[in-house]
Length: 320
Image 1 (spheres, rainbow, N blue to C red):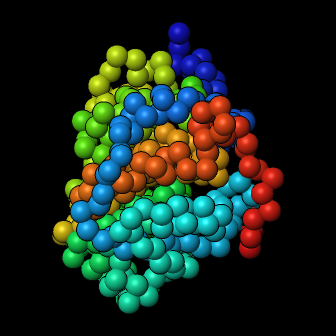
Image 2: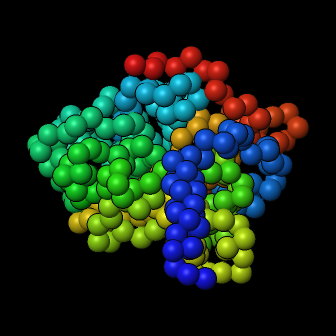
């Protein structure tokens, strides 16, 4: 075939690729995972009876104004869900901050959990954040908390949490469904003993700006492309969306981050809660047992099923 006859085919393929990139998974219908028997979840939580933290833990929960329709980016709603639960754990105290902590709050906190779209931080605020991590502060960063614009500010955010949105021309986002499972790096201590993959219907970002000492520990990939492959092979496979979960160390501090957590119903999924609780424990150098009751809290019904069938998209959030 002559080259000039190939150009229409090449152009069509490129056009289809552009359409797929622009779609961002808009055709995917939001759908929680089906609730599962409590016993199935307990296979991965283990027996936490008598589990206790080794020290007092001071958690600071950072939230911001909700910026999507109800059921998506419900930053305040999720804060109001998790803060009371965290307070039930013996030796845990929880403080709250809106948009950014004060220096005094950083000084008092052992762990910062952030779920928000951060405002444009000042150089002084970035310095406070970086100092908190480097001196041994722990961070759990959820979903859009890794986005900072413009890109020169993204470099500063990545220095604090390891990964950040690199810019609209490089970083990507899309919703995903069960045909793209979440694959876990189970050789990492945060995910040791967990399944190699989990179904999820949510949204993630990838091709993020990453600092040294970042380790990607979960990725979204087409199910057919991942069968029989190791996690490292999956990361290199066609169609993979990395940066679903990562860890980062800086100075004495440890960060556990995820680009998932778009939908409110995701936080009512027991296996997703398990991932978050395992991440919290890892950042604090604690055993996960004391956090395991939260995997089931408020989402276990009278039939012993854990989870939700509610998409929660009818929530009247505080959209700005």
